[in-house]
Every structure is written in C-alpha cells, then in structure tokens.
Image (cartoon, rainbow, N blue to C red; front, side, top):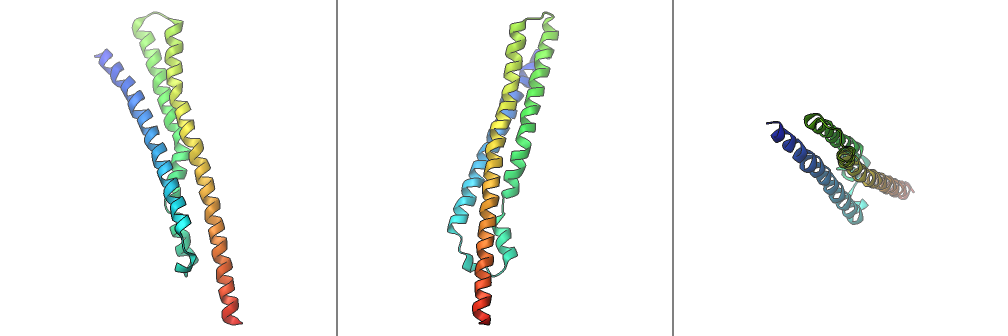
Length: 153
C-alpha cells in the first residue's frame, strides 16, 4: 500500500503540478495574444464612454495577473511534495544514500523552477498589456477633448 501511495504521489508531482503549470503557461500566452489582437483591431470611434472602453480593454488582464502571482506557489507546492517524497523514501528504505537524496531533491526543485518560468513571462505580459491600456485610454481622452473643443468652438 505504501509503495502505491508513493507512486501516486510521484505521479501527482510530475503530472499534476507540472501539468497545471503548463496549463497556466498556455492560458497566459493565449490571453496575451488575444488581448494584443483585440488592441490592434480596436476602433476608438466606436466608444463614447471611457468606462466602457476601459472595461473592454482590461478584460482577462486579471487572469494573467493571478497566474503570474500564483505560479511560483504552485511550483513551491510541487517542491514541498517532492522533498516530502524524498524523505519518506529515505525513511522507508532505512539507509541514507547521498546520491538518491540529491537526485530526489533536484527533481523536487524542478517544480519551483517551472513555476518561476511560468510566472516571469506572465508578469511581463501583464505589465506590457497594462501599459498598452494606459496608452489607448490616453489616446481616447485626447480624442474626446478634441471633440469637445470642436463642438464648443
């Protein structure tokens, strides 16, 4: 039974945590591309209200932010599980083999590394998109001011 639990825990680490991080990475990239395509096809003349425009511009940005801020924690969870498995295996065998310990810990740390690999681009994408939103909103404000000046003048 304990060997079955150990195999299940290792599979959870490899497929569960790494799969979740891969999914988070794909979602981030997909949303980044979708937002950039939306921004490039945007026609400011279609909007009369700044708040409506801002809501359209910021759709799904929070998802990218959440992924960027939580991916390291998912990776850390994988690392903790991996370290627990390494110590559990050492306790079951009853011997201390430095090579097995180092291999187990190195494999556990791959989850943290993957979490960081997912988080860094997500935060970069989020920051880039926020800057793009600011620029579009500023351009909209300038257009609105020009409209008011031409209507009053």
